Length: 260
Length: 296
Ligand SMILES: Nc1ncnc2c1ncn2[C@@H]1O[C@H](COP(=O)(O)OP(=O)(O)OP(=O)(O)O)[C@@H](O)[C@H]1O
Ligand SMILES: [Mg+2]
Image (cartoon, rainbow over all chains, first blue to last red; front, top):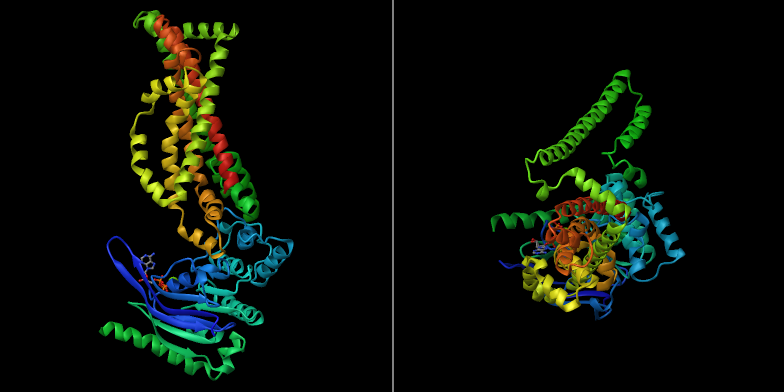
């Protein structure tokens, strides 16, 4: 029995002029503690999937179940880091990070301490009293990550969480997030454009195609790579072959689109 | 760090700019030439300010002088247009016997209350519209009509309904700003980026929590900017109210002066209104910049 499952999820966006089928019959399921990634061209519906799984948006067809109940029955159980950071400009960094606990009425000295620890783990020390305006894009993204992690959700949805970071910081954070998720046995979905990131961090990779958004191919990451630190995965002998396969799947789809 | 950043934002203030630059100059190891150019820059700013102030004085002195002269030489009818010296004499008399103080007090009190009630009511109405999309859509045409309507035309009805007293006048000061405040703030609510609500909802926030944490604070700058508009509107409502009720206040003095053909009194009341309206505007402006500093 799976922990999180999508059953034939279809989603339409309506405007007054037209309707877009953003997702077409998406089905997959995750066991507890499993970490999967979504890769695919821009506009294929990755963010749409996350919004639906988070329960913020209602799919037009199909079911999203967490522990066999609709996700909407668990407000706050699913942590969602949006594609842009959306830090509240009128709140200090620490108040931004403690927004989740505040909403869930769980603020305490302990959680504050945890927030400060997480901030320093992602390389942000002594910024807690600053305002988001005075931080760089990469720093803001890390604050948003901490804001999502601090509430300790059952499921984590990360929409391109490292896209604004320099390469070095990105590799370090991949290691950190990978460690945290494994340590606490979290279930998570990662959206990324970086194939290397998908291979090194997650257990399974869904390659998507656009118009309408579908899952084109699924890749299992070899068992040897799964528990390895992401940084070392990139040097593993099994890394490159998988990278090439995912790359081909992504490109094959584009060729199809051009000819179609 | 953020605090420093905020202080240096106030660039129009020359002393702040100078203060900052002195610090900057020390940090940068500037040459003599830099220092000289900087002095020149500050000098130019001060010079410009003096010139502007000079012309402002010329205009007011010229206007008053010309008015006085025209009145004495009977180029204009002194009975209708009075003269600065008569107005000053009347004001001195009215202030020394204290009779005008009560009128000023009444008008200022009515305006301040009208302003506060109108603004608060506008914020409340806008908030209630935000709670339900359908309710907002239903109310939309009524708001448009009410907004287009010249509110002072409601004066007689308000006075009949509330009785000719402070209540009716304060209501006029409030009603004139409440609809436009509602519309401006409600459209501010709607322009807040929906993704802030998404973030909150992902934490399981209720509608009220979304309002409190995102919608309301994000719209604070809009609310603050309505204050300055509303204070001017409230003066209009209150003066017209006093015209109609004709009991007390600066509006009453104008109407009374008009009826007994004492145009010196009319003009003197106008001068007092101008001074107090400008004063109130400045105070609201101060409150506004203080609020903006606090809110951001
Ligand atoms: N609010 C909306 N209204 C209408 N159409 C939308 C809306 N949001 C997304 N879409 C459409 O749905 C499709 C999927 O969008 P989505 O944001 O999920 O893509 P994505 O895979 O996350 O892309 P990216 O990699 O660029 O972030 C796109 O074609 C987009 O135009
Ligand atoms: Mg996206």
